[in-house]
Length: 241
Picture 1 (tube, one colour):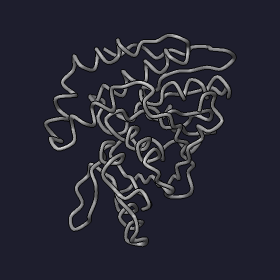
Picture 2: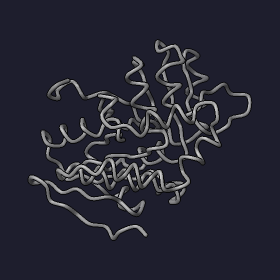
Picture 3: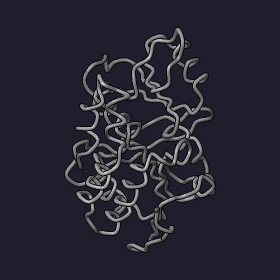
């Protein structure tokens, strides 16, 4: 059973995990979107691979139109589109297998919808274990009331890895390291087996990237521009970067 929502005060700003979609739509501070399997990691990997243009859409038809308008564009999604070339929403693919000179468009069932539902937020950050240290460093330098948004709220609440990661990120922002416990909790669910079964080609390689902390030293900020959000890496100002 998920714990009741709580709000923690840490160094003059508040942090809490969202448990309803209305919390996300109404939030006016910082939102950290957590879609652990695999959107958040895919976006981080796209940045690290050298992509200069990354756009997020919540509606498949808009993402498809964006790909058609600009031919030098790769489309990433776990959704099957008839007659449209796409790559899976896979951080492994995003990092290793493609032409990084092309623009990237991404649309998913939960992560991209959560980003586009956050239009009232002062800023939108995309987070996961792989960039959790960067998020903590950034938050300590930029103190804004923060809502951590598990993306599964917009698709399937049984994707509990988003809640588990969000709670661990809440702990990290409050100075407590619960990464190992969070990974253990995820391993006790069926979610890893589910992902590998559904994605036999990349599932294991994706999981190897997803369940590591601090391995992707980027900080994706999504800025909503009408029907899409553009992604920028704002990690340059962080210590040690």
